[in-house]
Structures are given as structure tokens and as C-alpha cells.
Image (cartoon, rainbow, N blue to C red; front, side, top):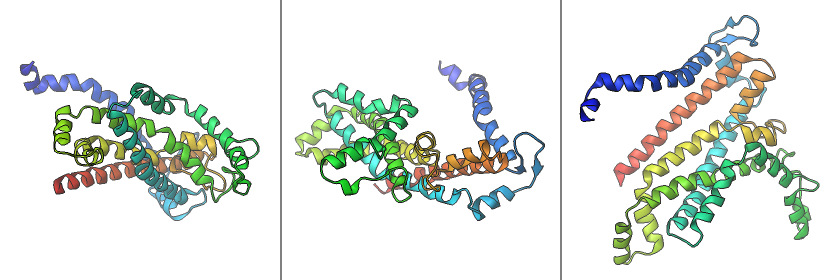
Length: 295
């Protein structure tokens, strides 16, 4: 086995099939999208090369709500990092302590992740329905009729109403990652902390969280880049409306390509999403690295 690992030609030979598959599925479409983004093309006829004009239009004009969609994506990223992940971390730490019914709760928290997004979208549309929705019915039942409203149909609250299901759906996903990492911490460390008189809170902040920091870095990365490419649930709930209030870069891209047949402009948005995800991933990696160095 050691001889095989030391043979660079053998390593390249075994890695080559996976690299070719990765290149064909990931790298090639990225470069093709980059080429399409330099064209004025409707997806059918012959494209006209216009250079970086689509990118200029992307940042100068805003008829399709692209600028607002970028802001909405960062709002979702903020909710994911500062609401979704802390909740997931809390549940993970509680379950990792070995509470009664641990397996049951772990499964229940993860159920929203494996349910079809279409089903989840329909569920929340029923919750938000202005006439017979659960939320308005509950508010009416407790005497808060003045708070009832059309949750997905008003520009002042549609964004928050649409983002809450997105945040809720993936709490269990991050919880499971953190739970697995917390469970992998050797019990001897917890026993030593207990002997030293550390409380449960002190153990969590001084022992568990620092030891699972690599997993937290992964969760933050997934949460941020997932916010930038969020599409399916937003599309089902509002399709970016009303008046672009809930637009995401991916919904603008979808509408540009498949409704307006602006393949070049839509490809420019896809390249923007890819570059933004790449840059933010690098920033997060460096941020965690600097924090580790300070610690």
C-alpha cells in the first residue's frame, strides 16, 4: 500500500477518472457560462459577441431587481449565520450530552432536510394563507387580529416571511454536522473538565466549541454560499415577488434565461454567483484561520 501511495503515476492514474468527471460536470459548464455571458443570445439563433456589456448592465441597470436580490441574499446569509447556526449549535450540544430520546429528536430535527422542497413550500403557503392560514388563524384565536396580514403578498414583510422557511429547513442539517463533531470529542476531555469543576456552559464554550471549530467553519461556509444560490423554496413561495421584494440572484437568473430568453445576461448572473461564492469562501477560510492563530 505504501508503495502505491509513493508512486505519483499510480496516484494520477486513480485520480484521473474522478477529475475528468469533475471537469465535465463542474468546470466545463462554468467556462461555457463564462463564454455565453459575453454574448447577446436568445438561446436559439446565433449569438452576437458584446464583450463585458452584460456585466455592465448587471451593475448599472436594475430593471429586474438584481441589485435588490444581492441585498436579499446577504440578509439571508446574515439570518443563516446569526440565527440558523446558533440554533443548530444549541440543539447539537444538548443532544450530544445524551438526553433521553436522543435518536428520536435527532431524526425529527433532520426531517425537514429530506422532505421535498415543493412539499415544504406548499406547507408554508398554507401556513401563510391570508384567509385560512394557520398563522392568521392563530393570531385571531389569541386576540391579535390586528397583526393578521397577507404575509407573502406585501412588500414590507414578504422577504422575512419567505426567508423564515429557508432558515428553518436547514437547521437540522447543520445540527447533524455539529452533533456528529461534538460526539467525536473524546469523553476523557469532558471528564477532565468535570473534575476541574467546569459547568455545562463553560464546557460547551471552552471545550466543545473550540474542538469542533473545523465543523463550524464548514457550516458557516455552507450557510453563506447556500444563501447566495438559494432558489427553489423562494421560487415556490413568491417567485421573487411582490415587486422584486424577495428576489434572489438565482431567481433573477432563472427568469432572465427561461422567461426573457436573455441567455447572455443570465449567464453573467451565474458567473457572478460563482465568483461571489468563491470569494466569500476564501474570506471565511481566512477569517477562521486568523481566529485560530489568535487563540
